[in-house]
Image (cartoon, one colour):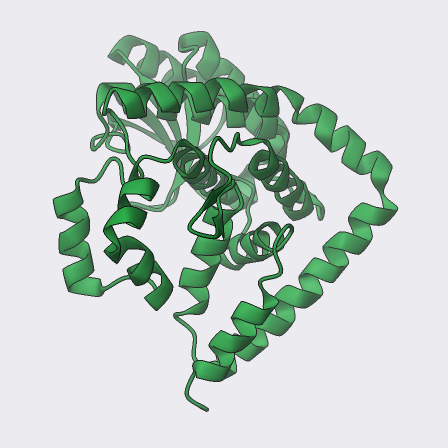
Length: 312
């Protein structure tokens, strides 16, 4: 597969209307195109999933006629680690998110973080839960957000963690106040997200089939030996992660659980799209805190973590 890469000052020179125009041109050349943002070898916007050079060159010529961006066509490496069935799943999700979010790519809207938090929360609520509890732990689409937040919080020292925790609590209060007092905006957002949310059930069933046929597991596309090698070098993200994945029953459950696998794939695609929306790594943590704590009180867990940290 090929990708058409557009190099330049993206934040300065792009806006939603331009992105929509370029994406429309790309779709005329290739209906399966999707967008990614990358900093590898210089910041660029990737038009991904071109199957032949003719269609890629056609898009390249059109963009060069309309802009001063530097264009490069190269082999696509973002899906190198994926098997054919997983490439299909990945492409499917990428396209569904682009169709919903493209009007927010390179947007200056002050509400774009609230939009994606609302969407992420709706997705987490909508992922089916064939098994609702495992050994006392609630299994749902929210686990992934909390897991990623917990990994981040464990990298901080006590002073940093106190500061970040205060910011996260304040951000959640402001988000909740806005959503409570702007139900009309939330309704418009939910309508705009309707098609994406309706596809969750279909994607969940696809993932169930892939699990049954042993084409996907929680750690895909990495093998268990690759995961073991990473853990031996870097350790688990937290003692809680280590405990969960060191227990054979827990590991077997997580590895094949369709709810957790679906949530992980959705969350990872959301992370990719955050960069297209000009949102930061800390915005990701704000989203994970608000979504991860929307159904479960995680503040006690965070406060216990603070108490365990050395006092510096």
